[in-house]
Every structure is written in structure tokens, then in C-alpha cells.
Image 1: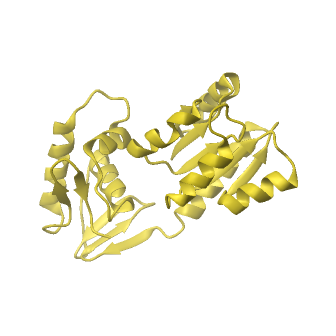
Image 2: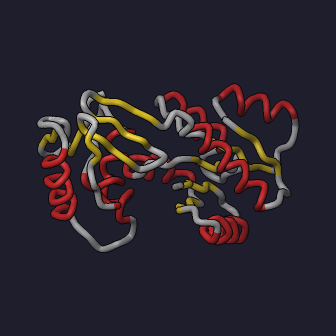
Length: 215
């Protein structure tokens, strides 16, 4: 599970990142809200944990603009604002959960996992001759199961979850390899392998834009 933590408190943000990563999550921590949408251009997350009282762009404004863009990533509000009016406003803007400070890190972890379970409840997906089990990490073509490497599976899963739009090599590199020093040629090699296994035309490409699976 990949989580974006938006928190300007350096001490709290650092400790939460360390705790969540020790529990097996992948965490990107952002303490400057002005970089929020730039980061979302190149990365996709399973859950966003969002503080409201950010110094440059408020959490409410980030949430409002996120939903206006059509992004449905689950958002958990993490804030010292505990008034009912604050909660009502955030839920009306599209928040999925709300946790007030102070809190136990274990409760945050449990809420993140609950949001993720809700997101992946429908784990079986069929696209033409291709069937996928997103939770079980399995894929079949015409009923025959494919044997994919972990990297190939992650690339295919990311493309399928973002089907209908072009995904850049930079996005795939960031999602699959993170900070590892690899380049576009690795993406091209894995796409080539996937195309050998999947139906012809299943993965489309366009120079300068990236790769796409039709919705």
C-alpha cells in the first residue's frame, strides 16, 4: 500500500512516516502543500493522509481542488480541528475519514487499512480476454494464467488502474521502482515482455505521452 502523508510538522511527519513504513506501508511525506499537485502528476497513492492547517495552501483547499479534478483517492483528514463544523465541511468536500490530534499511531494505521480495504473490495476485473485478481496478484488471458514477475505485475496493475489515460514512463518508474536508479529503457523492456503475453493492442503507446490501456 502506498500512502501520501501531507503534514508540515517535521517532528510528527517524520515519526509517522517511520512508524507506517515499519508496518509495511510505502510512505511519501510532503511538508510543503504547494508541491501537492506536482507530486500527484507523477505518483499515484492508495490513501492520502492530509493535515488541514498547512502554511501555504490549506488542507481544505487541497481537498476541494483534488475532488474537482475528479481524483477519487481516499482521503483521511488528520488535524487538530475537532469542531463538528470542521468535520462537516471536510466531508462535504469529499473526505473519506477524519481523525483529530492527538491520536494513537496505531489508530491511524487501522483507519488507513480500512480505507484501502474499501477501495479494493471488488478485486476481480475483466477487460476483454484479460481477467485480473488485483488482490491475489493473478492475471489470465482466455482462461490461461500468466506468469509475471513482480515488476511486470506492478506495471500492469498501475496501467489497468489508470486505464483510459496515458501513463508516462516517469510515473511507472516512480510507482514500480521508487528511488532505484533505473531509466526509461527498463520500462520499455518490461512493456515489451508484457505485450508478448497480452492480446495484441492491449497496451497502447504514443511517443511523448506514454502507455495506455483503454477504459
